[in-house]
Length: 279
Image 1 (cartoon, one colour):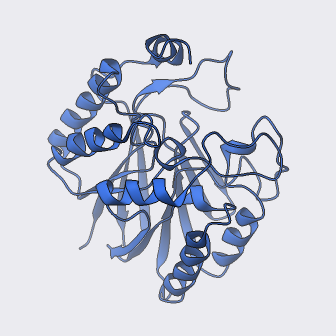
Image 2: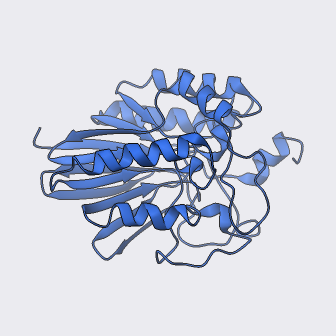
């Protein structure tokens, strides 16, 4: 395959009770139908509230099943719960094996690897990192075996949370500790990839569109497909808008295109909170 076209969507936050979010997903679906990439990857927060509302996960899967291309999924904190961190409040709810299994039973595997166009693609469940769950160790063992098979190929890594803000050793802060892969799992993850040609880390979670390069690795933050978080509620780091990201992989090159599907609307989180009764 001389070229592999991949579309990344993220933070769709789908649930039957949020018609605006569903409408934004339909606009993305129409764009994907017209463009026909080889694969769609949803990098998490597929559902609005998987732990409390299992139907959100099933509903999200039904909408993705209607897409005209294959999909792969990675869980977000709204799908299976959030990571414990060394600093900051305890997550509500914390990630659990029961919620992970629930996600996998509907969406499929929550970590994966494959090859296309001379690249190695790896998807990780970033929410189990620093959790102490048995699967955290299992996934790191699996990752070590996958890294051993890379054989010099360039690597594209997909996960829900960005690995860091600007630098690998950025200090954690209480107000932002849930935003990035937590320590010490972050350091372990970075070390595991230190001996390979990691060209791309694609994530979501922050609801901001960002694209920067640290050393030889390009970091792409996909925006939410569903809604934006206003500056009163969240620090502005990059671009706050809804949208998606398109990639073209060739044996030794990568093109990234930042896209807003026609008809997508920048729904503010305040509208979502109002529909939830302010919770």
